[in-house]
Image (cartoon, rainbow, N blue to C red):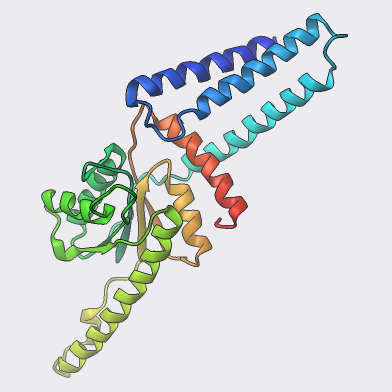
Length: 278
């Protein structure tokens, strides 16, 4: 029974790997991890079968070790998937002061599919909340003439988002840097706004209350907008960097690649945890 379960898992991983290659091509990031999963499960299934048939030729400790390793891996990934998918907010909080829109891959100076989905959500939010400042975060990667933030700004302009509602962060090349540089930029913007507020307050007639310049109270002031599979990691990195009053805004992702993205981000969560970024 165990042999068939492991073999079925190997076949499923191999089939999904082929689907990914046919659907989105060889350039899909980390697609070969499914081939590794298939190979690991297949080897484990063969070891279990071979030991059951020839117990004297293969020591029991080898199939037991492989089955334990596979089982632990499955449990860890399931826990991570529950965290990743279970923490996705169903409704975005309105009236946030700033929203950090995380960048993604750009192809030929145009946003890739994942980034377009994020930007469509960002345009929807910006038009519904015209007072919110959108922080477009993404630098220039190798081979790109423009930064991700510049490509994002151009796309949002075409969607009707006013240029004055957008601020570009063009230095980051990773999620951790997206959050770090955007946090610093927001602190600079808040300081400039406070200085302008004090100047405007001195210019107001005495009978006008200064509260006219204040925004309504909110439980959060900063939003982080990214893909649903990526939101958990981004939020954890932000909290690690000291950002407390934050709210997540999830954009949809490709339905066929959703499982791949979730597993890939689960591995990234483990990596960030080991690196001390979470």
